[in-house]
Image 1 (cartoon, one colour):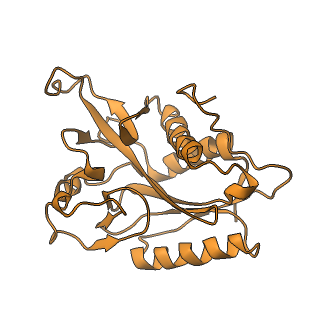
Image 2: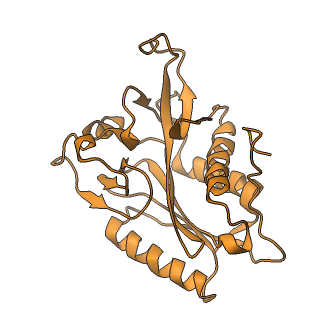
Length: 238
């Protein structure tokens, strides 16, 4: 069962399957090139011509608009390039210091359940953060993964302060996933100010370094891979 106790988020492959390919891209990856690559790889996976892949990248500073993005949530359209994309969700920021993991899995060989898949992605992020003693949490009314901030003033209405540390936005085509997750390791948090992140106002954004943890991208990648294998099975860097 999941941390919510509602749905099983185990997405281990059914039967024997090769390890998921785990690829870490050096430098900054052009966003349009990444979209084209994901589209093609998802097609090849669906046609049985390529294996599953988790592709770890960093992008130059940019904003992306999901299928539910509202124009009024783009607060500073001239700050960075804005890309419309077919993933679910609203506006988000990508940039150096943020680990983006594009997840291309064949859910027909795992479990054909979108809601459970999103919960599994949340569990993956939460498991990676836990390796740095950060308690990531999900919220039923808000997407992404959140951390409590008792060091900050309470929100209007006396609600405890909390910040978003990771975003999720996926797309499925014939049960093959693409797009994925974005976790803030050490991005420029001020760059989120050009949008209403994921359409959610009134909350802050944080990162591992902002929380006082001197975590490198390499450190986080090790934790991310270990947590991935707990939910999705073996992964192998090639």
